[in-house]
Image 1 (tube, one colour):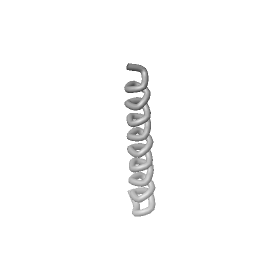
Image 2 (spheres, helix red, strand yellow):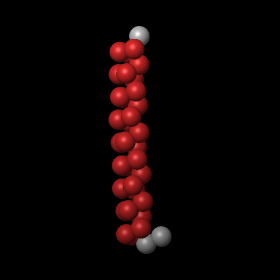
Image 3 (cartoon, rainbow, N blue to C red):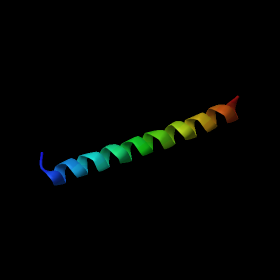
Amino acid sequence: MNEFETSTFFTLRCTTNNVQQKLKDRAAKFHWLSL
């Protein structure tokens, strides 16, 4: 992989992690609301 591909890969990975974390937080909130 060249430098551009590497940076793009890491950007996508960070973005995916952020989205997953937001979904987890949202799911946790809905879970508490439904208790």
